[in-house]
Image 1 (cartoon, helix red, strand yellow):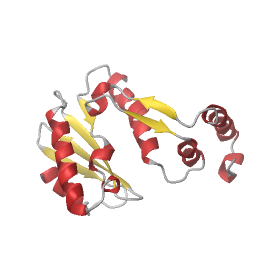
Image 2 (tube, rainbow, N blue to C red; image 1 turned 90 degrees about the vertical axis):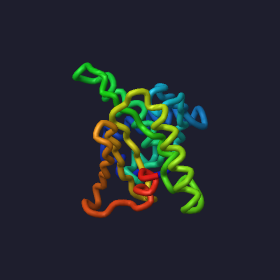
Image 3 (tube, rainbow, N blue to C red; image 1 turned 120 degrees about the vertical axis):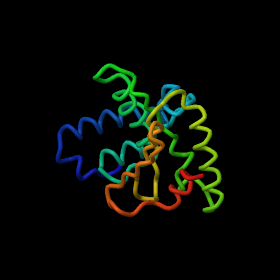
Image 4 (cartoon, one colour; image 1 turned 180 degrees about the vertical axis):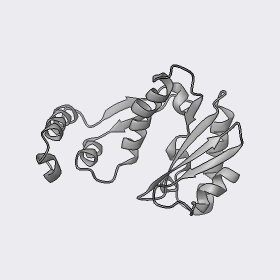
Length: 172
């Protein structure tokens, strides 16, 4: 088992780590299923022990951790949380548009544009579309507001620079 220096100082993290150890070591991975309207189709992700380890040790989050959080926490809070109403929000699967998933810049832009266009065609009345985007060791969020035909770019590290590749994908 890996050493967890940060966990040893917190009894809550120690207990959580023990529970994760007990569940994940019995199997190679845990399947997390999303609702069909999260990304427009039935999707799932597998969490491995390494995914739990990065959360417990507060290291860089994996794509699987981000997606499972979107599936089981963020989307459910937006869809079913107060106030009780249809928020008309959906997500683009990060594997569709993030450059870290593809080889070659021009191929990535073409594939990502096609994937985003497919998602927009199947959005079923959603007004807000979240596009998590991995720049490689840093996450940003694109938010499409379909009512005003506007894309917002949210980056915690920079307020003025935007990722040109994501801009090309959205513009396409």
